[in-house]
Structures are given as C-alpha cells and as structure tokens.
Amino acid sequence: MNNVERFTKVLNFEKPDRLPVIEWASWWTKTIDRWKSEGLPGELQSITDISDYFGLDSLKQYWFRIKSPDCPAAASHGAPIIAGRDDYEKLKTAGHLFYDNPFDTADAQSWSKRAEKGDTVIWLTVEGFFWFPRTLLGIENHLYSFYDCPDLIHTMNQDLTDYLLRHIERFTDITVPVFATIAEDMSYNHGPMLSKGQFDEFLAPYYRQIVPALKAHGIKVFVDSDGDIEPLIPWLREVGVEGLLPLERMAGVDVSNVRRQYPDFLMIGAYDKTIMHEGDKAITAEFERLLATMKTGGFIPSVDHQTPPGVSLNDYRRYVEIYKQYACKAVL
Image (cartoon, rainbow, N blue to C red):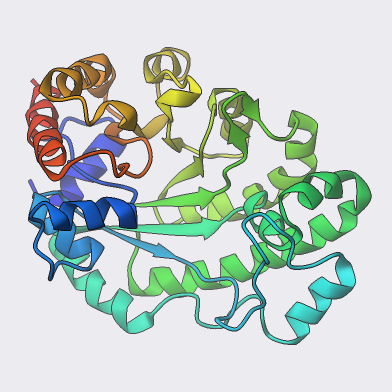
C-alpha cells in the first residue's frame, strides 16, 4: 500500500496496512540547530530532506500566499498593518493583497508527479476568515472590529473567498490535494476567541462557499486551530468542515472524548509534545493514551505542534521508532 492510499484509507475510516507516520508541522529552527549540534547532517536543509532522514511518510504542504512579497509588515507580532477601510483599500489598490501567484506552479507540477505515484500526500492550506482579518487589523483591533467595523470584516472575507475560489481551481487543475486545512487559530487554552453568534455572522457565510468548492474535488476539509477546540466542533460541522488539527493536549483537548461525541470526525495531531524529552517510557505511555482512538479510524496521531528544542536528536529518533510501532499496532 502506498503513502497516498494509506492516508486516504484512514481519512475514509477504512483499514490500511498501518497508519501514516507524519510530521504535520515543520520543526522549530532552534530544534534543528540543536539536532545539528548532536549529529543531524548539516547538509539537510529542507523539510523534505529532514523528513526523509527520519523515515517519515512524505507530506507536502502548499500555503497560498495572500500578501505580495513587498506588502508592509506589522511592527511586531500581532500588531496592525491597517487601521481601517481606507488603509485596506490602499493595500488592494497597490497590489499588496490577493497576490497573483499564491503558489509556485512549476513546483506544484513537479510534486504532482510524486503524488500520482502515491509517494507524497499533497496538502493545501488557505487562510481562514478569522485568521486573515487578524493579520491586517492586529490581534486586539480585530476583536473590536466585530463591533466597530463589521462591514469591513464582511468585505475582507468576501474578497478572500473570491480569491481562494479562483486559485483553488487553478491549483486543482495541477494536482488534487488529499486534504486541506483552513488556518484560523481561533481558540486559546480556555476555548474559542469568538462567540457562536459571531462565528455564524462573520465566518459561516464564507465557509459555506469555500468548503463545498474543496469537497467537489474530493478533498477532506480540516480547520487548523490551536487551543481548546472542542467547543468549536459543532459550529464547524454545521458549515461542512470534516476535521481538526492539531488537538493540543496542553489545552485539554481529549481525542477520545471527541471520538465518542463525533464518531465520524477527522483528527490529526494530539500527541503531547511536552513529554517527548522524558524518555521511552513517557513516549510509549502517550501512544498508549491515543491507541484506542487510533484504532477507530479517521485519526492520524502526530505531534500536537512543532517539536520543541528541549527534545534531543536521540529523543526524536526514539519517538519516531515508537511511533512506527504504534502505527502498526493501531491496525491489528
């Protein structure tokens, strides 16, 4: 069974020969720097090269670029780029938003050949309708904007929707991803950062345009959100979303609880990154925690965010070795 067949079977709740063994989030730079000091070959630079080194299954992500390379940047993380509608329109007029080339066509064509052979799972990420306005308005102003300038949020999200619909069609003419994630990060460790009413008013209308466009190509649709995402699941299901990642353990997410409540919901992640440095016993115990849910299908375990720099090269090697064992145990 090849990589694409295996991945697809899991997402369809069918039984593969084993579960995929993946790293959905690339490693922190500090983590890679540590590993190179401990023996990771220095010539390994790309995510692909490092994944191959560890014997992980091949996963290729394409993230549509919305902003042009010369778009003004925020002064600091979470700071605003624009103050309101006038600034937004100026960015559009200047060509800084809705970049004409959101992905590298030649690169996508090259990877599509690996996907056709079953070697690589292609994964598409698009900015979502909580994420995109926040990147322009800044974290604090974005939350106020639901009250202060609701019309602007609707304009931004319809503009984004129209843009994504065009380029999803362009991309799928080249290669059809196995799954897609809509990047949102709209929860923190105590739950969602917006109300159900705000979701229904400001996000749901645009999900109802994007999700069917992806599903029309047979693409499984996930949302990517950190934090406690369990309260979001009913909201997302209403607009057709089929799954979530990364299911952060530190935020209290319990995949066994999610599976009990939503037997057909897809999940990727959930492996507690904070125990990876504690040795074989702790690594194994965490897989044991997840094993019953792994056996139910529709769930691919993976680190619940990027592997932290506290994890040594040897720790990570052992994690991958034990991961491979449990990928087989899950289908016995």
